[in-house]
Length: 304
Image 1 (tube, helix red, strand yellow):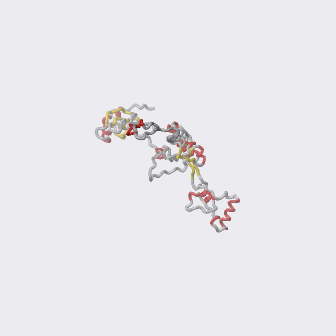
Image 2: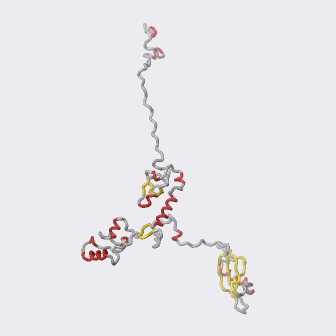
Image 3: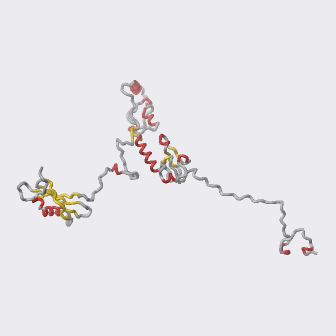
């Protein structure tokens, strides 16, 4: 194996490499010569510091070479390469992985992948039985003989139907049961949604830790249907921070329906009238200058 010691003539061609770098770069942005690296026999790359703002740590790499037994060094290529301490842009991430909750705005479209793990087929679209089944033959005979709409066999998924499915078909039954969806939540999608809701409005949140009681005993809780009703509901209290949100049954806040009952204001006692006591009243307080006993003699009152 040949040594990768830089070729002497190529290593000495620093001025040639600098001229090439200055021709490619902006004026005054080519810095000091860093090192000469041997790429192959009679092929050397000269590295120069890049002093252009925004390219901190980058280097101008100028490769020179010479032919066998030739003493003339020629220019190969000039490129700008990042160094060990170069300021680089973050690694590119697809938009589907950069998307965060709340990024979707009015008019935006968020396509869902066909193999999304959060979803699974909600309706198989199979209106007919297997080809060799008796039911399949009977359905075919009914479709051929009976000229009524009720016996029509609708093909395809309910979501793919342009019109309302005909009565008597499996698609019509799916429509009536609320199953006219091509895909529904998978178990994985259900669990991820439950974990996300529990992190936002669950028992471990500061609000729930300071609540007087949990949502399971609150009168403002509207339970969900299906399997989620065992753990979640919707808050219907306009004064709660979780109004209109899906909350865990273990969540709670200060707006609990049974948090406190306001006491009624105290009513004063009715006045008490004692009719067993006689209160003396002066007949002529202006003459006597005070109260006088009603049974005093007339002489004491100044009458003759």
